[in-house]
Length: 438
Ligand code: ACO
Image (cartoon, rainbow, N blue to C red; front, side, top):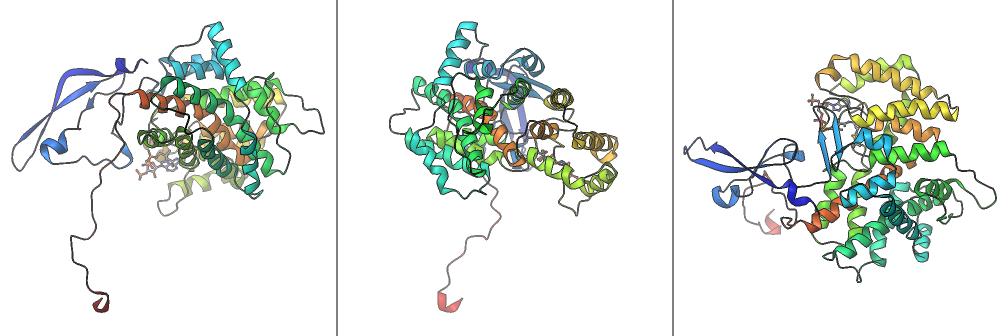
């Protein structure tokens, strides 16, 4: 655990002056390896009787973390210090899983041992498979994923001690191994086909593709192009520091909850269209736009403050330059479609829309660039995934980040239950009137 390295107290102080009394409030500053300094405001209420107010937590740090770093102004993304571009080029998703969990890239022996163990845990409990029968076939696969992952807490509860690092590691490996199996079963249920069990001769992505697309009656050939493309997309989605779903998992975990239940909470947050649901929303939006000559009409809609429509796949809370993952995916999108021999007019349309938006003053001034999800859906579609599985694919990859952050939070000696404050704007204190007189 390298968490301690990130907690560097700075010599610098920050002073606030309360205008009415002229009283000074002296606050310590904490510096990390990279990124802006952080003012420690934890003593404000106890010593000065005030809270801080930051809806959406845009400038609030909730923890120290050694897992992931983003510089949104420069478009930098590092996993454990390594740039995403190098990891995407040189490593597999399983190597990156090891890196995110344990802090270092694995040796060949470590990787072999880790991968074998992940393969060993791919099966879901037999009775868990029956849970799917409780869902209607048209249930959204994210709803099924959330419900069934949460239900894992019923299978692994009493025997797990979250204060024990070995138990935490076992949870991490189990969760990462089982999520593709559960995700594929959700899909099979939605298309009324038998669940295909995992085949541990296959690697992580091949196994998932096989569970998803194979049927008992026919031979299914796993496309190496599809498996490689999926591996890349999983790498790019594996972690993104304290985003909404990861913060949900940490917050849930801070109460000491069963970690499978905490992951289910993360899945529910990811599903929202402002977060991981955007990849599905982008494809629906491109289909709705239909042709390049309607790009301007939709850009105008996105700019209209009276219209709730937003250009899906554009904008990011942290990236105010480009999203480095979007650059990698954009390039991969062209390569994958060419290798698969897919000619999708939606790719052409997406490029036209991107070009039009990037020339538009509104998007330029607000620093709105394509995010990771603008192009990912086009690759998923070319690989044969139905649109409602796109966010499920994101969830499989992000499970690694969720689990790594959950474990880091559990091991952090500074961690406390997450409990934000509020600015109360309701009625002032008043007395109850008797019901006959109201
Ligand atoms: N289309 C049009 N206008 C936009 C867009 C967009 N996609 N995104 C932001 N804006 C505008 C907002 O209306 C706001 O304008 P204002 O300052 O005049 O009020 C300004 O840009 C800033 O936007 P906020 O919503 O305040 O930024 P925030 O950081 O809270 O939201 C978010 C970021 C949620 C990603 C937003 O850009 C968005 O809704 N994008 C579309 C959904 C999307 O692609 N989500 C995926 C994010 S990546 C991920 O989670 C994997």
